Length: 347
Image 1 (tube, rainbow, N blue to C red):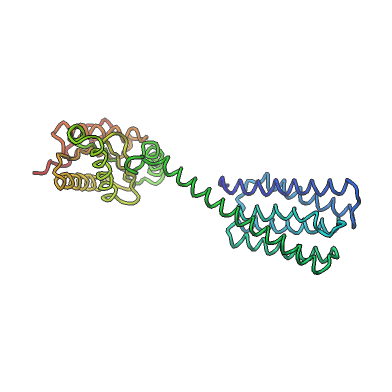
Image 2: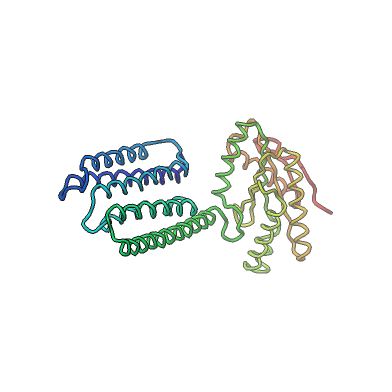
């Protein structure tokens, strides 16, 4: 059961339990019911039993099932109110329908929530008639109550949507580098663990690219940090554009980048790395910048069981590319990180 489904199932269960307890208390305390106190006790016990089942279930209950239980809740509220009776029609009991509407508009899709409101409106209209409320005053009471429930429900739905959007925004920020918008180290590690687990299950290839900008420190010293930040953002867009949607591109340091390539073998990763090297070199030439990219590439093998292993192998190849003069691609020969040339500097 997902977290969201668990929350809405347990919330509905808690509502049923509390509602049932209120029904039991109303039957025990004076004044007596217009109808049968025994019937109210039975309805309350049923609500409590349903609530306990919902609260303890571990099964995934979809919106249809939860909607059915919510509609049953509306029926139970209506039945206990009709049997109990009040001196002034149903005026003292109409607040019980608020639970149904607020729950529906918070947890259900808008169309479903409106359907639950229609059911409440029909039940409340029948209840007013059953209580003998005069037509004119009953119509006004019904209209005010239903309109209030509708406005309250729509406000709850709007707040819920706004909250969800804000949570998504904050979640996305937590996963991304604030300067470039690429993934950050933590998100890369999370995705790397997932991809390695998938590789073990399905025996699919997996590769990783570690890249570092050549000459970036000199650029920063000469043009200043604001210009350096602009270059990092532009290079990040280049890396993101030149990779697939399923690839994970992350900035893991000042001018250090990592690209995780699911379902990519050695040859595929080498082609991607060379494409990235050429794209950054072209960007540097267009901006008349002394800026190129050194890249190390590693492919997961039987000796690599963690992202750190794969990353270390790619880093070893990256350092070899740096030692060979930069602006080139080197491929890790194995877990030790011993590198083999995979590309040469462009002339």
